[in-house]
Length: 241
Image (cartoon, rainbow, N blue to C red; front, top):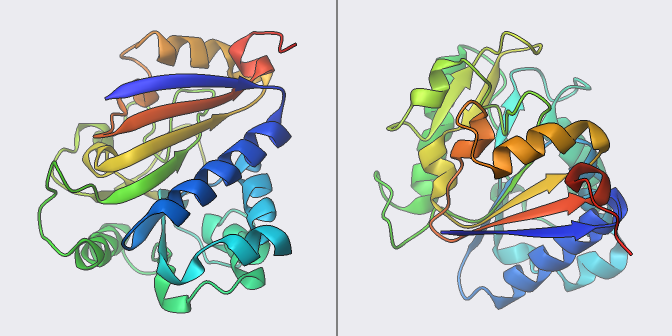
């Protein structure tokens, strides 16, 4: 695994670079292309760019499957739902097949819902166990919280120790709502992990994660392929000329 940093001017530049990267990878894929989507403000702009008619006309919607890296265990019409956000900004404007969109469950028992989502992933993957030479995802989008969390892998939570399940619930002690999240091994089964990080408020935690601080959950993200950090100048603590 290797990790690269690309520093860009601002959140808009990051969203455009991410959209271009995803289009390039999806067009080059010879088989079904699986993506794990993220919530957050920077991905919102990414999804808006993907919904632009010019971009949408070039994107191979018919052979891309969309999953979610995490979501709050709230109804889809909640303003806190990643599923609802992506639906309103992206999927309601593009010809993505309904059966190729896999939102996380939002009803019933969270643990049972996590198992149900894992079953959906295993069906899409075509196996009960992850194989090192056959990644589950082509691209996983991730963000970075000021407390070092990514997806819904929050500090001090049991999910950080999970090495068997692909999906698990998380009840963070410093954020609202129970969550469902991909686990470390599920995220690691990827060709690319793309972190999108913006804002000066992320500069300190970003520096700690890049230094490998074990106290930060994001420090433990791995990939069978590559990890790419798309970071704006404020988060990177740099001036882009």
